[in-house]
Length: 354
Ligand code: DGL
Image (cartoon, rainbow, N blue to C red; front, side, top):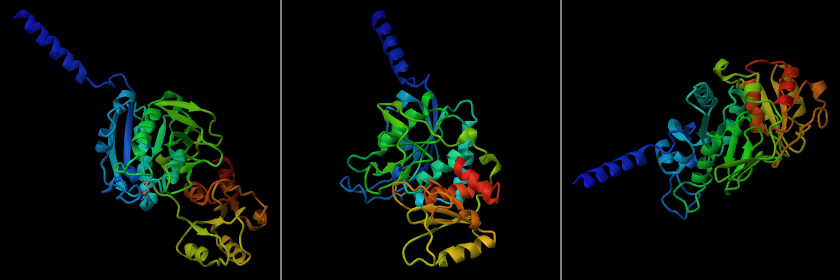
């Protein structure tokens, strides 16, 4: 009888120990969910492109990866539940303030933001500019919904959490973990919209994450996070900045319309080296004369590289060049920078440094 009682006690004790979370001594990671395909759901496992984004709540995303508890103590917050093409400047500011507040908490070791891939690169760059922390901040999405065969969201999210829990990811700025790569939130961009290998940095990834371990090959060169002069705690609204696309037969209609609607800067998404049609130059010079900042970037796919006074006499026109930032990232930097300065020479310094 006694033996049965003792063995019963041992079984109960064993059962209790098994129930103790496996992550009692693990880093604390918070997942801020905003929607996108990583939270998408479709009706047919064979359909990886036909689904509804922003359906699955964060707790279900976490529950869908049982091994997360092996790498971190994870909890989730549903900040938004939207497709990322619908992000606004206000969404960015709200998200940035939440990330910054969590980063200040002693019981938070890393933060993951799940996000649609359409504007993921913009949000990652924005957080890189305005959140003052050296704790890992990882922005992650997926190209296929979890309901599709060979869905990529689970591993992308696992990699994001394992990286957010890693001490070696500290101080490297905001990172993006897609398709096993570790990319800088500043450099990475969605280069193709139908492959799991969608995100590329023109100058290469920082490293790889394989089986929960990070392998680093390079470090960010531009100012970010702790070394940024911009602070989300001092920003309540971003400046209105718009993008106008350059192409053959272009006119200055869009640029003028944006300025008429109050744009403080217009990003010229130019061909090649940020080139500007001779049909548009006079209009841009007129807008500059009215105080609108003109910022030349390039819409070439695998990485523009716009230099001052090459395609246009920027010194004479008092224009700014976006260097290697694509138009959508140039918009983010300009929208942040214009909260602090409207001086074109200061803006140009900022575009060289960030
Ligand atoms: N609607 C797109 C978005 O939310 C889906 C693309 C994705 O998340 O992969 O960005």
